[in-house]
Each structure stands twice: as structure tokens, then as C-alpha cells.
Image (cartoon, rainbow, N blue to C red; front, side, top):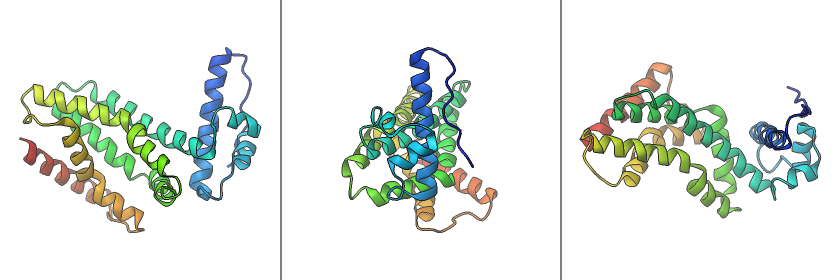
Length: 211
């Protein structure tokens, strides 16, 4: 699929700059997923985005920083979607369940599995990248889960505990095994029904431990 260069629209400079950054990140995402991290160069990204190499370097100091921006963009989208979906829920436990279901579906998306594989493969060469992703890129979604857990605790729906610890365990329970299977090249679910059954069992196990 060809990628059109960014079109000048005459909008204010700030908005045009933000659009350019999004365009670069979207282009880099496609190329990293298609070709892997080592085989994708800034020159290739610039050519596909229809921009100059220096245009990218003025916004991202290195390819590593651009890859971090790719991961950060995806996790920010997850947090925004989960927060929007949970907002109408009067029941804090149901809002938390909805966020976890979105995390489950997000983590198992083929493109996210490919990006996850890239991160695992490159983290030994760039340990700061892995630490930054874990500490910062997932922060919006972790903060959302923490707020929802606290709301459920305050409402007396689940027992009080350290929300940071509880949400870390919850994320592992929901996504740990299936993500591991996908990363190793296995297909853990033969159908959507099996996916739904697994999530329902993981959620029930979580509720049984916190109530």
C-alpha cells in the first residue's frame, strides 16, 4: 500500500507540526511491523513518509526514540479507548472489567504481538528502551486501572489493597499466558469463543481473589 506524503493544508503551524509527527509515527509503525526493527532505517521511514531525514531527526533524536514513540502512541490509544468505554459505567467493577477486556483484545492484536516481539528482541541492545516502555508508555493505562480499582475499593465492591500491586497482577492474569503463547509462535485460541471463555475465566479468578 502506498503512503501519500503529508499534505500542506494551510492550518496553523502547531497543528501542522502535530499532524506531521502523527504521520511519521504511523509510517514508522507500518514499516517496523512489516520489516522489523533492524531492517528499517530512518531513511526508509523518511522516504515512505514523504519527508526529509532531518525532518524526522528534528523530532526524534534516534531510531530508538521513534520506536518508543510508536509504542507510546499505541498504549495511549488503548488508555483513551478504555477510559471512554468505562466512563458511562455506574458500576466501578464493570468499568474495570471493560478496561481489562480492551487490554486483552489490544495485547493480542497481530500488530501488537509483532511490536512486542521487536521490543523483546532489541531490549538487550537497548535496555533503556525497555525500561522506558515499561515505566512510561504503559503509564496512562496503569493509571486508569489504578483509578478504577480505587473506585471499586471505595465503593466496597472489592477489598482494599495496594492498587498498583493489584493491577500488575490483574494485567498478568488477563494477558500473560496468551501473549506468551503468541510470542512463541503458538495459537492459544482456536476460535473467538475460546478467547471469550479464557477472558471470562481469568476475570472470575481475579474477582474470587479480591472479594
